[in-house]
Length: 401
Ligand SMILES: [Ca+2]
Image (cartoon, rainbow, N blue to C red):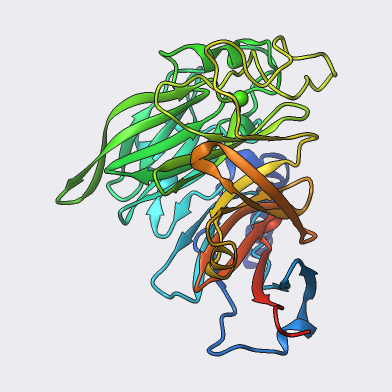
């Protein structure tokens, strides 16, 4: 009897294990991932380490030496964002499918509201947003038949904003399109949100021109400090006609945004209040089936043109300040960095942005699809697909020849 009981228990345990394995294999959408804190050591050493050139690759360009050092892979499949932590030598890469972020139980909070993360069609956490120490997440969500997106206040464990249901269009929903970038300026949070489709003629893209819909917009929230954290209030449309914004930053008094065009026509835009940036009527790009966009130009009457459009597309992904060494070298010019997925590069963009002038664009190849960029200790870090991290050290070559 004892023998049979033992066998029964062993068979049952095996069955449970097999079922769990099959669930992981067949139903990855329904099994929560354990993408908690993935802290990556930035490899910042005290003092300059000349041996680093041997560890990675280097690239001479203009009067600079760029050396690329792979930091570490995080096995993150799709990067939702990068978070600073107390240790300045570390940061955290957040996976789009994470259900716990720095101890905040996103999955549990959503379940308590009757929501689940809409993971199909490249859904998940589309952007991690840090506002004065409080954490928010832009997430694709589902509640019964309604597929929508919302802003979750992770620090206060509540929904900060809930957007309306997406139109039900068969096979045309793609969460790759919704986001996003963000920046803060003068007590406001700016969040860019795209349209959840690839094509220019469908119901999703039309939302970019509908002032009542949050999609295809730059949204603006008032940042209100509370005893427990930060509250986002009074959402309003700041600009419209955006297709798929990916990165945003404040540069002096300007809000800069980069967005994917369709096939061709990735844009650098200066975002001004109540301006219309044209999508889906005007773009330098064409449809993926090579049909022209209705307007076949970047700008039409009443529309605001990009400061610059990359044709063909570079798969534009992020925008950042230049490290001090570049900004100083090009003093008198505005200097920003733009990153790219498809071109596996970042670009040094120089110009007079207030006058909407781009004077030069220099491409620095790095052999990785760059999703995010950030600066720490004047070093540039690039986070590529699958959470690989590249540290870029920039030194001047002037006087060294
Ligand atoms: Ca545009």
